[in-house]
Amino acid sequence: MQDESPTTEYLPARRLSRERILEIAREISQSPAAWSLGVVPLAIAIVNETRQIVYANDRFAALANAASPEAVLGMRPGEALGCLHAYESEGGCGTTRFCQYCGAANAIVKSLGGQRATQECAINRKNVTELDALNLQVWTCPMERGDQRLVLNSILDIAHEKALRTFERIFFHDVMNAVSGIKGIHEIIAPELPDRFMPDMDLLRRAIEDIQNIIETQKDFLSVEMKEYSPAFALCDTREVLSYLASYCQSFTFDASRTILVDPSSPTLRFSTDLRILQRVMVNMIKNALEASRPGEAVTLGCEQGEGGVVLWVRNNAVLPRETKMRLFQKGYSTKGSGRGFGTYSMRLFARQCLGGDVDFESAPETGTRFFLTLPG
Image (cartoon, rainbow, N blue to C red; front, side):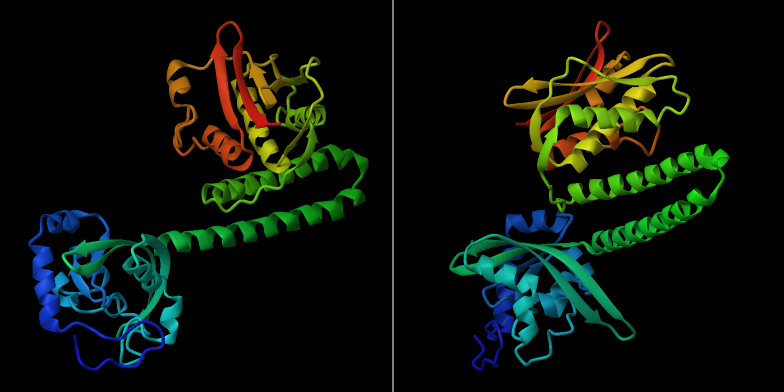
């Protein structure tokens, strides 16, 4: 150990000597595990109990803009990665007041205590000409080598993912504002026009509402996939839900060549659900059924009491091909061409993660195809 330990505002500042660090590094580099860590497609750094790097792979060196993995040995992670705060105190990385809120530092501390950890870590770093930022996901795992306590750090740069989420939020906000503006103009103009323009204005209103629904559906889909959606449950009535869906979705068939019926034998059942998400799932089912139906055919909606819950279903006369049956809920699979394939996947995603239920189907020449949403009672 070095004799003098600088003051610290968070973690201990003491370090091992350069000679001792290189000795530990040689031991690790000669172990069978070193080759495996070298080919892992993540930035890997092993630190000792003084949080100094005793092993780094090529990906970590690249992330640190270092000439080689050897160049970062003895440094602490923040020092190697160029954190602006790493040299604000004599003790270096982990000893400043900012380090108390560093995800990487806190994950390492937890693993030095014997536990695995995962944290996000945001690092501002400055080179000669510009300010640079890193957004990292850090996984830490405790290790032991003889009497040494070590921590394995696996690091993934998630800056692109974070930026994409920010851009998505801005996009949805701006587009929805634009559509709301168009809807407001429609509401101002429509009452002033002669009656002969009313059919066209109704068509325009439905188109605006469809655009809003598409935007909100995509926004909900991304929110649910990222596990950020908070369901809002309320009591519902099956007959009211089915009647509304039939009326709303009939507008999708402008030529009225396909009709939507509610099975008259469907019982009136009370259940609790997130109506917003339920409608997302059911509208998707109905749209798919309408697209698969031929002119003159009907799509039927219904419900029944299931085991411990409620089942809502949509049926048409079409029969699904074998490949479609096998791959229907795969993310990205579609019978409608490239760039599609989130419809049935999103239905099951919404049902399972938001409603506590499930979506499935049955398809046979004798009965046609029926999709059903099973919900808890």
